[in-house]
Structures are given as C-alpha cells and as structure tokens.
Length: 344
Image (cartoon, rainbow, N blue to C red):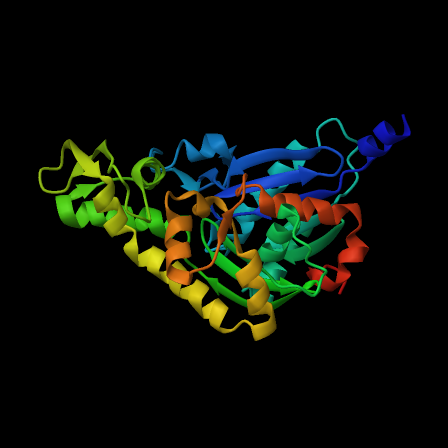
C-alpha cells in the first residue's frame, strides 16, 4: 500500500529528448511513452494540431497553413517554442492519474552540447513544468541503461547512434575520459538516400519513404543475398508520380558517406583513448546503442574496421532513457556524472 501510494505521488521523469524520437520514463512505472519528436502547428496562429505519432503521419502531407515540425536538429533544440510545447505534452501524457506535482526531470543530451544549448534544454523543461532539471550525457546514460559498471576504473566504450548525432565515449570512474560527438545519424542517412534517388533517377521521395528504404533494405556491409524494393515518388522531369525498384547495393553506396563519418569518428575516439583503458576495450569490446545501430551490418563493418568486438544490445533504442531512469532512483549519488543542474 505504501509502495502504491508513493508511486501515485512520485512523478519524477526521465526523458530521452531525441531528434527522431522522444522517450519518457516515469519512476516506479518504467517507459510510458515512445513517440516521434514531431509537432503539427498552424503557421499563422501557432495552434497545435498534433504531437508525436499523429503529427509524424502528417509530415510532407499538410496544407500550406499547417506545418509538421521536428523541433530538434542534430540532437539539440532548433525551435525553442515548439520543443517546449512538445515536452509539456509528453510530460502531461506521462502523468496521467497522478496528483500533478511539478516533477524532477533527468534529460539525456548529446555529450558535445554547448552551454547555450544546455540552457535551452533546461529552460524548455522548466517552462514545461519541471521542478528541477538534471542533464546527463547520452553515452553515460546509455552505459548505465545497458548495465555497464561506469563507476569502476575499467574502461567501457559506448557508441550511441541517434537520429541527429553519433556519440562515442570511453567511460571510467563515473566520467567521460575521451569522447567524440558528430552531428551525423539516422537523419543524415535518410537524406543521403533522398539525394541518391534524386541524382540517379530524377525521382523525388520524402523523408519517410527514405527512412522506410533504410529500414527495409539499408545495409552497411555486403550481404550474401542482396535485396530490393519498390519505391514511389515524383518524377522531376515529367512531374508525375513514378515507381521504380531500388537495390540494397545502391542504398549501401548512398549511405557510404554518413557511415564513413561514423567509422572515422570511432577511430578518432580510439586514438584518443589512454593506453590502459584501450587495453580494457580490447577485452570488453565496444557497446553499440541507439536507433541508428539497427542498420543491417553496421556492427560487422565496425568490427572489420577496428578489429574489436562490437556488442549490439538487445533494445538499442531504449538504453538512454533506461539509464536516465535509473538515475531517478538516487539522483544525488550520480552527482559526479550529471552535466548540469538547474540550480547550479
């Protein structure tokens, strides 16, 4: 009974505020929300029509006066006002059946975030109803979510590939020893597919079509049996709808540039790793998290490029929010690894 009552009152929240998807974890309940980071608004009145999955279904299909906006770009806030609206709505949905006490919020952010960007995230969360705001670097949150011993002197390397950023970090003794953060992720891959189809076939496709192509036949490593799929778009010459077949080989070629950027960032992070910790990584391997790590064959490619074991976790999309959720159990014991506190 006491446990139920404390859960009823407790409304501490952890948020993985992602470029592509936002996830919300409520203390005592687990992950309660996993929605696309999209808001549909009226251009002139700024009235909100939809938030999350419903808004994403409107991308590229709205009349002139409605705009489906993704308020985060490259892992950070691009539209402050819309981010605040989205965050408030996600917090409201996560607090159903609870007495609304302003919650404490742990938010996972890219490790390469600037002071100005930190302030923007904090202000958005406070304006959306947070009592206290704590920021945690995504790679550390992912490592905690996976269950790595981040407080030990042994080195753990995490590569977290999200929608807007790829975060690579070596973690030991509750801190990031070396890290590399590049603004390349799932969105860059989608864009590379859009550009390839446009240049090669004079066919214009939308971002959602590109994302579907990436998920169905996108690969980073050669396949034993190549795949193909039928895609639809608008012929840029004739101006009419057109259908064509795309192969996984073509998509792999289209993705080569963003994937090369991820490989280079990983190699750079390994070069910057202190020798003693590098020895730990040889033994333990590299842990791969984030939605982008689900690209077929990416783990094989990274293994071939680094000669190190690559461990792809079971639920790569959930690691960051689960790690941020664990911090809620005892925020003050994680003081050393929190990037920023609202009352600092």
